[in-house]
Length: 115
Image (cartoon, rainbow, N blue to C red; front, side, top):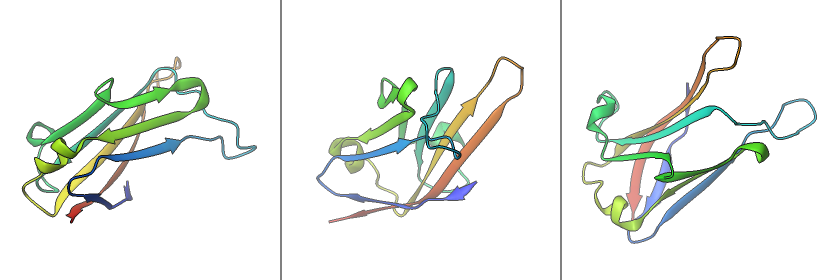
């Protein structure tokens, strides 16, 4: 798990692009079959079901698998719904390759909204 705090601006949309690259050579990681989810929670210890905002593929997440790109987007209306601040967010990335193994990576951090 890696700490990744974010700052949102009240009244503005938010967008962040993650590009996954192979550490040796810098080629894009093919994300076909990978699953991503972003959750914005009132508190760090809250269960996923308490999420005020949930980002999934087609709903706030856009994935370009062969280029290794994932784009997260939150609208200003969604940001306005974050009433418990500072809040918490977590980003889950799960890969289930053909060999049956499972890898989950996660970013988490505080969420603040500034004027």
